[in-house]
Length: 490
Ligand SMILES: *[C@@H]1O[C@H](CO)[C@@H](O)[C@H](O)[C@H]1NC(C)=O
Ligand SMILES: *[C@@H]1O[C@H](CO)[C@@H](O)[C@H](O)[C@H]1NC(C)=O
Image 1 (cartoon, rainbow, N blue to C red):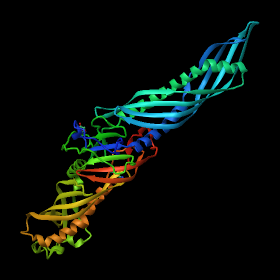
Image 2 (tube, rainbow, N blue to C red):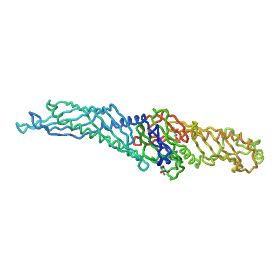
Image 3 (cartoon, rainbow, N blue to C red):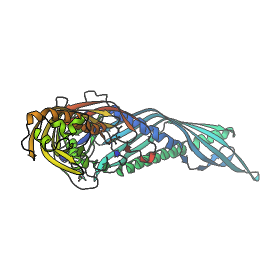
Image 4 (cartoon, rainbow, N blue to C red):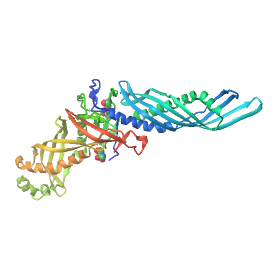
């Protein structure tokens, strides 16, 4: 199986308002709530600090008139931000964008100073040099991010970015005492302005980088060689005073083929009962149905049973009393059962905390004679079951339990079969062969569209009419290859 890559954005939650425009194209929505946004903010700040501390600011020089000494040329060079500490931070969405505030920010700078001046006594010039430390205190920053849907990708950009510093303190190493006052008087403003400019530049560059990663996210994420998930963004992100939401198309499609499928009404509000959950992801039942209709066409929804826990079911002798004419015609021959789905399974999410499934299958009874496979009868099955779902890692996994089934003879080369006699045998085959097979596949599940590095925790699943909603917290662990941070891979 090729590597499974999936990605997506997260955000959203407590409430996704109806979106009349293109909502019928969107079958997965997510909402990041305030606790989730706080997590994202802390993550972004922890990423921003190392880029700020690596900043080097270009030299500042000035000729300053110092009393009793005259004109002095002073240069501050090698200005480096060594440490940044964000005292308080905050993230605030509103209908126009998302603002990240930092206040009580302090930073330490180091630099070199150098001065020179001539004297009135003659051509001798006097110079000296040393180092200095600067502490910036009470700095505040605000970065407002805009988010838009651009042809199915997410466009993230800076709407506003500002930075204010209240105070700096300068600590010179060496130098004459007049120098200290001279630097404070002449350089306080330029230092503040250079550092402010540099911080704004770095913050903007960080957003542009993040934006270009978002824009380059794939629109189809390969699940395996049969299905890809369409993760195209639909509509602009949803912004309110407490949350940020995204809708994606969310249907399974054939890899790299243009095709699809049912428009289903999107249910309006989704709610997580626990407002402290960081993230909600709502999946319409159309998502499951799109997956099943793809896998339906694929090879592994048709298979041959040549081993069964009750091996006597695979020899005509085992059928001796159930279908006597089969045994009479082919005494003691081995058999295969060929099971194939006759149309895609149908999934309905009900509000009674479960998922109803209807599975249509044909079962062909083959008799094996030497190298020949002789199909002798075909029975149609309609099975109804109840599915449960859970979250395993970042996968949505399921388990199916059979409720009931009905069967009918589709065709036969061995005359009439007594269905009431065959029924218990079918039940055994379904329970011991068919269901374990289906459950092995749905038990692996499929990856939810979530950024790489994000791990769901304490997920809860809620059922609403035709939709399930996953309400979850998450943690973040730096992926192995940071250049692909936003791509989820399992
Ligand atoms: C993916 O979803 C988008 C938005 O709904 C749609 O326009 C596009 O045709 C879909 N792509 C495929 C391959 O189905
Ligand atoms: C998640 O689903 C994918 C695709 O079905 C599978 O390959 C992968 O092993 C699953 N991961 C886990 C943790 O079960």
